[in-house]
Image 1 (tube, rainbow, N blue to C red):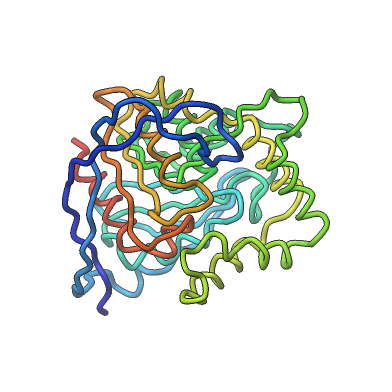
Image 2 (cartoon, rainbow, N blue to C red):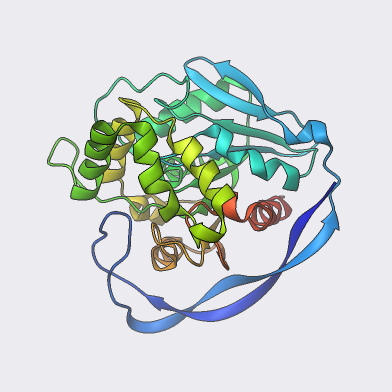
Length: 326
């Protein structure tokens, strides 16, 4: 079958330094100070013949302990573990499979409280609680070292895991990273997190998803199929899992974990993301210390649901990760 692929070109461009408090995972502060250099990618779409067979474009559903997950078996390639965001699930990664090498073992979990995965046993979990669940999950699967990719809220989980288990992560990709709201656990929820829980309770999952999904897609009117996929995944969220995730978002402090990270880490964001915009992603990238700071990529014409709206570009970022692993 044929499909789109993206050629990557490295560019050195000035980017502003930001500081200040985070609000709802969105950086609203003005740029200050002198510009610094960030490595970005420019994407040029090319049409190539895919070497991925139809059998390698489907997930198999499985379970490990309390975690429900999807897996596409590989052969001699790396193992990739991908973590979805707060309004999604493992199935949302299906469009990626057509763009990933058939030799890769690809594993997408349903986070605790999502799909058929059991929720965590604490009402207000921290990112470290999800990282602990992830550690048990990869242990049970016998995965000694993985490529790890998180999207949005999944970045908080992935960074916490990588910071505590650096020997288990060959390289990390943070996509559309949610920075977290930095609230103390047990206190008053941030307004953004509380609104998520209230809206789900008031509207129900279907109407909740219909209201929120278009915001995750750049130019939603021109991309109805992408909006439909995002809405379908979001309509599956439920309580208490979603409320636990919203509380974790409220207490999340991604930048703190990134400052102590000792794993090569890349950052990718949709250039048109209005949920976790490029400025916030640049803050995450800037928090990484050398030599762990990898590439920064902004994908044109893509919104927050980057791996659904631009799966080929996202897959190329994953391929670049693999190339950088010894």
